[in-house]
Length: 165
Image 1 (spheres, one colour):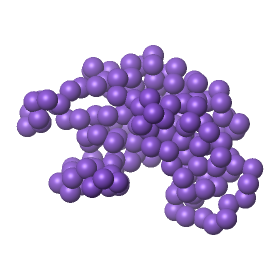
Image 2 (cartoon, helix red, strand yellow):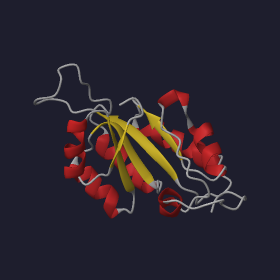
Image 3 (cartoon, rainbow, N blue to C red):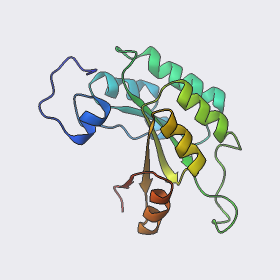
Image 4 (cartoon, rainbow, N blue to C red):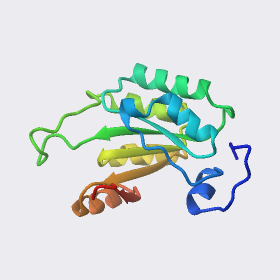
């Protein structure tokens, strides 16, 4: 386990990620960058970096920064991207924050062996979920409305409610 302190108890989360403490940092864009994510992972939890406007280069730099601060270079970390639905029946105000770069971002997540991918806005495309699962990366989808649960489950992702819902 990444932390030097022994776990006081185990939970499904600690067993799933082989971490000491059931603590997961939300990927809150600039409010929780690589330094905070590394600190959470170093303390025995799982740190997650997140960003709305990541380009592939920016994501790679954020992961490199996080990994450079890890005491155990094999410790788990996660990546959170916002993937609102665009086109079709989606809200006209929705925007593709990846600017068409989702395949490249997915490849970077896989290449860097993230333990977890989180989608806090929107539902990731099924082909992305399948590709991440094939690479051994767990996928989590946070939902803000009950109707989104069915969409997330159909893509093969477990769901967790947002705290404000």
